[in-house]
Image (cartoon, rainbow, N blue to C red):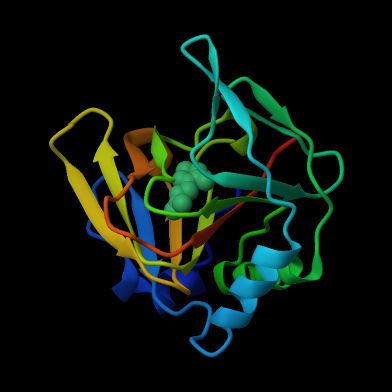
Length: 206
Ligand SMILES: O=C(O)CCC(=O)C(=O)O
Ligand SMILES: [Fe+2]
């Protein structure tokens, strides 16, 4: 089971959020200020963004965001009743993956990308707890572009909450028992906002 390295835990101890039953870090400027615009533009242009439909309450609805799924050949991923066949890695994604593996000591073999075009794009409450992620997955979530609010809610103690802003270039790392005990979401905002790209690097088993 992949866990973050002792070096990572030590180097980023000051970035760990005070959340019980969880291991969450928010590292600002994981992608340097200078390179952020170039990485964001490359991803906007080169990623094969798609508007997917998912089944909700027995109906087909459009997801309120664009998505893309890149992974090692042969990895597939099932959620919301859809099985995703991966696209093949592009250099920009491989470079980010290598940086993350270097810093965390964890291998990743896939990334789910989300493009939130405006304030009405969002992701509802969920945990990243699909079986193919294994027990205690390490999920490395990069943000580029517009700052957006992100929230956590404890699955048993519903009054336990943690709200944060994910700035451009930041890494939100979720590890340990986070997915067992917490849900997270990216809510809509009524403000007029610029696009945001999110990348969640994962390790798919099997
Ligand atoms: O956009 C975000 O920050 C959250 C994305 C997320 O939770 C996911 O892809 O599972
Ligand atoms: Fe998630």
